[in-house]
Image (tube, rainbow over all chains, first blue to last red; front, side, top):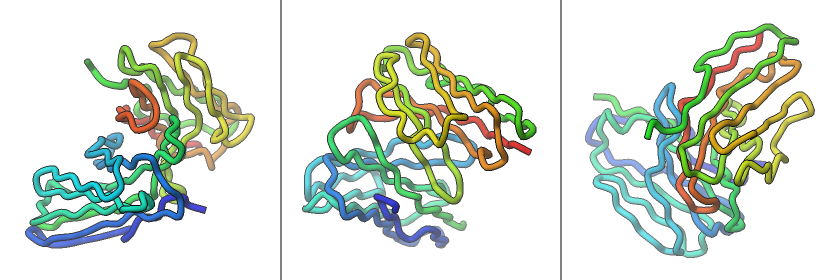
Length: 111
Length: 114
């Protein structure tokens, strides 16, 4: 059973479009992170959210942590080909040291 | 800092052979993690260390897998004997602390067991 469910699994869009990817769980997380991974490389942290209802913006990327701290979303405005990659959410369930990753959303932005 | 360094980048071996993957974490990071990534199962935590001590190895698939961290700047993940189902990308990551602390990943080792 996957602790963190990400949707959609695959997303292919045209440059300039907006998109949202989701990360859902039945568990409560003390914090949640979003990573982006490019082919042949390891994931790179984009943001950490820790407070229920928190919204963080990183240029064209907007991250939201659900009020109940069970879910999160990533919204990209005016997507660019450089946004192409695998987007992973990762949750820290017990405020310990163990992060659990979702399966990821593979995003392709076509020029 | 050069970041987390893993070697080799690619490893092709035959079933039954021993495989050793290596990792040098970022200096000063107290936590080191080994992950495995496959299309079917995504990114799975195998084991992590705090101050060179293994804390949680519940993700290690079976006794064929072992990991060591003899000092703060080096860790190995060994598979003996290797099997085709071990084929995956193995990542090492380090962090200053646990929990919500940022993970820094290496570039991974692409392992193919024939």
